[in-house]
Length: 137
Image (cartoon, rainbow, N blue to C red; front, top):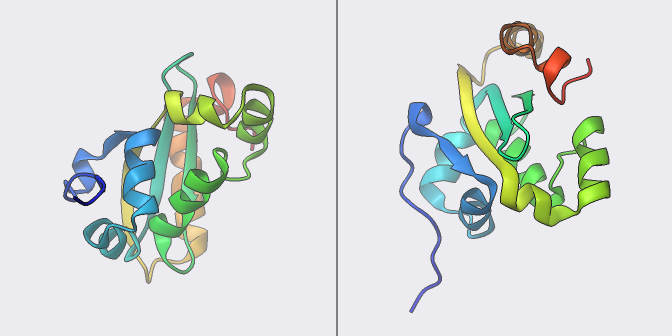
């Protein structure tokens, strides 16, 4: 039998998945997820189920959200300063057990990186993730 590779892509508006669930999808490079997430830029949210803190991030450049989230699956922190410190202190298992991913906004691949970054700043302000979360910029 084949190892479990995750559910069928549920639509952008229905992504609210724990790290460990996405981990199986990304490690198996599930084609439906990869095709869709590679075709868009966007703003995403990582919520820490342990303490309620949130991180707003953006995905732009080649392969969009798929490439960005692949980095998290590989590192646990995606090279974000606050998350890097957290995972260094608590270990990769912390990300696997506590991080939940969702998408706040999607954009076409033709959207400028500057526009994506502006929308990311909007969401950081709306969610207060600088004041009460893991965003520091």
